[in-house]
Length: 238
Picture 1 (cartoon, rainbow, N blue to C red):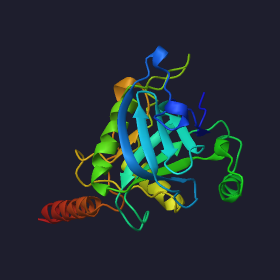
Picture 2: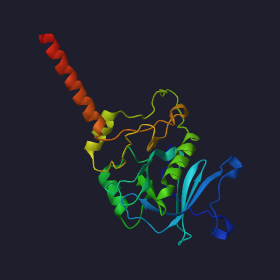
Picture 3: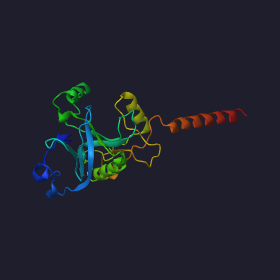
């Protein structure tokens, strides 16, 4: 069902205006953010463009090259998060993971070759970053991403369990972080400070990844458990 990242050049006003939307089927423009660069896959960020977020998709159009633009449906975004950690990415950005038709058949080496080759194969791109010139807009962009993702719940196929919601536990997140260096979103110590969002069923669309990898709280909890066990041991001896 996922269609992944695609080229987008349909602009109004003889190709110099805003993107042409599917208004006949109810698509509406929700937010416009100028001066946003985009980094596709492992490639360096491109020149500035304008980010358009609609009720159905995310569109980025270059300000310099009128023939350059990208779009991805919210149904193809499996996760979006924001990062301000310079060790994860040099600039504050919105990080997205993209589902593609090739997810189950292509390996990582082929993805890397596709992203680094001169001709970019968008069908194999699994991640993209949006880097606003004004980092203060990051929170607003993330909130708009969340709201629009909720408008696009993942359809439940026949026979699929409704409980399949892609919510990850702390242990699973730590295991995935240890499995590769590409896990670069960082999770807030305050569970109410949402910094990650996974798309899924409407009832679960606001599910939040609010955990800090290597969070000090986990260490504190382990110390408390050890202290409690030691206390019970001393009491039993008395």
